[in-house]
Amino acid sequence: MLQTRKEIVFVTMAGIFITSAIVAELISCKTVDFGLYPVIAGIAPWPVVFLLTDVMNEYFGKQAVRRLSWITCGLIAFCFLIVFLAVQLPTAEGSYMSDAEFRKVFGGSLPIMIGSITAFMLSQLIDVYLFSFFSKLTKGKMIWLRSTGSTVISQLVDSYTVLIIGFWIPGVFTIDQVLIFGITGYLTKLVIAVGLTPLIYVMHYAAKSLLGEKPKVSS
Image 1 (cartoon, rainbow, N blue to C red):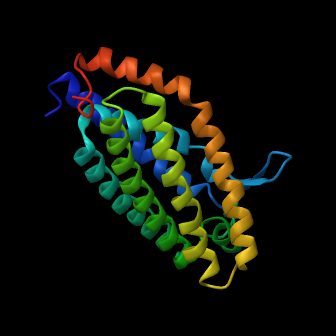
Image 2 (cartoon, helix red, strand yellow):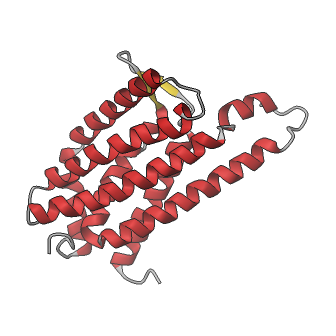
């Protein structure tokens, strides 16, 4: 195990992918003000997930990315379980954080957790399928189209799935709030996806140099 360069590269990418996805869920309780509109802090790690999804899809195949997505989904659920148990434990006297403070940060509701996991899995499956579709359509050319195109569509699903399941169905948000937060979050991801286009080419070049082989999707 981990004897070849390809195995080491895959495990490293998978580790960064999983870590980024879990961290995104943990920091989503904070809202950041960029001046134009508020944005959930959990968006910050997603550029890494976007890039790795596309590069791994290209060099390791869509089946590998699908399996990794399912594994990540399970690990996010496991992380939520650990956090839930930690919230239930009584706080020791003298702790710098009280029960109320800890619960306020980490005590997310069950609908939000379900919405987050569902949104992640749906968006990943859609992204993997569309990336492969665009790659075949362009015969392995136009990296920017298959990468940005798949992200633009999949993240629209992601943005609204978590809001509908986690906030609208439980009655936390009105439909107007869902539409507003959905479009602001989606536009932010869209700007990030377009802005990452040059970096996509850099990562593809780096992956090709490290692995010493042509992309799977385009072959």
